[in-house]
Length: 300
Image (tube, rainbow, N blue to C red; front, side, top):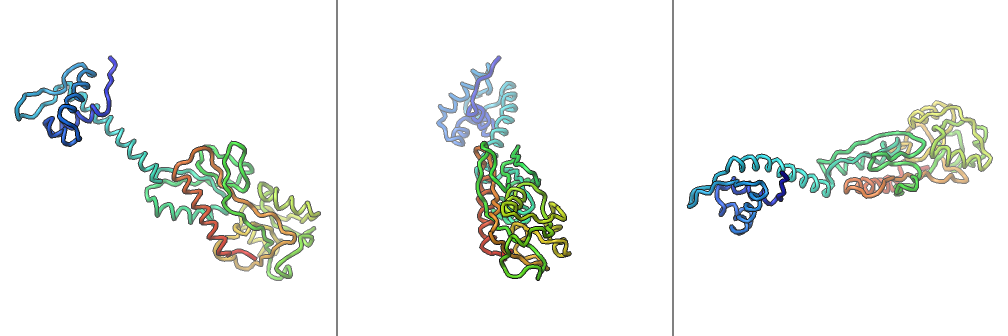
């Protein structure tokens, strides 16, 4: 037997059972009494029997055994529908879950402001962060992936911030605010791993100008780079935001290079339609990035 009935039929059944009379149930639902009777009649045709005993007069109607069975199952259905409606409402209001891929600079400088504002505006939101220093972007099941170059053709890329490359050295190692890149030829250099921005921008730019520093140490840890520079192992070329914010790290000097390296460009990678919360992650990251750049905490 195939049951064909609508949610309005179940709501009518539930209201009558709760109110005890057709008249009160009709008032509760905003129906006329005849319309409510039609809803019940359609339900009874669908389930193949009466769902109410109708004693007549002022006495309340009573559920039949079939009516009790249908109501018990129907309330489960109505509960799930209500849960779905609330979930959809939360989704459109910016609640729900968002999965974000990140890397050191974004984690340390941009995401604290993003997370704080999302928590303030949407206390019930569920923010999941995954950090990975990968050579190639893999959006996978992530809603947003922050990466330092645009994604492949099937991915949408939104520029979040342009981040200036600076020369990091001990105070006194280089004179002046601007240092010619040729001074780095053969000089000891503490460097990040040769992937992404480090290989495609920093080292490619130096090589294009005939500059080949002596890389004495590579590490993916920004703080380790700074520690080795302070210790005198060598200088480093780093994106300004990777040095931290808002305070400049102590014990180092920052210089601009001449000619200047292209900036590191941090993108928010997404794919297809976004949830309101994912759209807000991208928009808020761009707003935080503008504020950080305006403050200029780690500029030469």
